[in-house]
Amino acid sequence: MSEVAAEAALGATPEAKRKIVNRLRRAHGQLAAVIDAVEGEAHCRDVVQQLSAVTKALDRAGFLVISTALQECLADPDNEDATKPEELEKLFLSLA
Image (cartoon, rainbow, N blue to C red; front, side):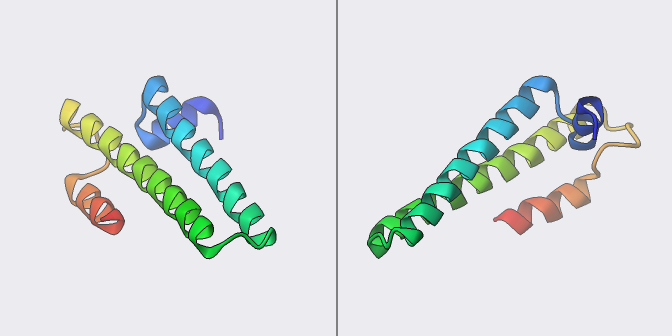
C-alpha cells in the first residue's frame, strides 16, 4: 500500500500518521523486550510490567487512530469515505 493510500485508509494527516507509527514502533520494541525477558527466564514481575507497557502502547495507538478518524468525520461530515459515527463508536468500545 502506498503512503498516500495508507493515509487515506486511516483518514490521517502525515503528522497523525507519524504519531501512530511512532506509538506502534514503541510497542514493537516493548514486545521484543517481553520476548527477551521470557526467553531469559526473567522474573514474572518484570515480564508482566513489560506486557503492561505493550498493552498501553497498543491501546494508545488504537485510540489515536479512532481520534484521527473522528476529527476527519467532524471536519467533513458529508465525506462519503469518512468512517461513520456508529462505526467509530463500535471501534472505540472495542478498545475500551
